Length: 239
Image 1 (cartoon, rainbow, N blue to C red):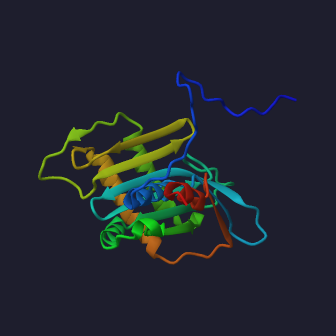
Image 2: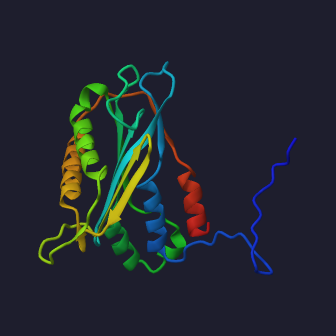
Image 3: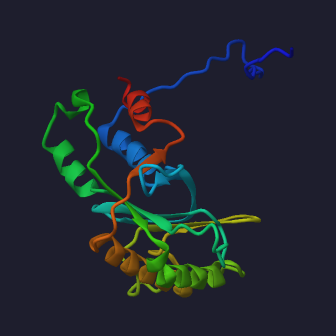
């Protein structure tokens, strides 16, 4: 039987150590943890009813933006299929995840507390995970397909006029397809793609409606993180 050998780090240094140093400054710790929560998990597994089997939903779209000195807001959409039309025999709805880091609150808390470094607090993050049944997702699917029209062709960024910018400091859009992935990130303060930005705003408004509405209760939802958030926090803060 072949040995299971851990990868060996080689180089031209006499000593090579593998380390995981903590981040020293509280706001940078919070930012690292918030970044993880606003892009993970890549998979969510759920049961609609107690006796059902767990069904795996994969992240197919992530939209994340930063409002300066205020918050980071992330929308993630999960599906059994990456592309449309769905196989109707398999389609079991979608999952929508909204994660918001209240950077403004944490900044004010750090400024007003000299002992915050020793407290090893969690950042202020609000998260909501919503299962949407197949009867309630047609408009959302059509808007994702509309976004696909803009991201599946050449993406051109233009210089933005100084008096015409969005509130976002940066914008990230990640879309998974059967053939691969498109990931685009830019600062709408400096550059612009009007079509993508307007469609992101439209999706954001629609997802806010879903978030604020009542939906059917389901039995179980497993958030399948790559690393447990408690472990990430431990090493980030040096606990």
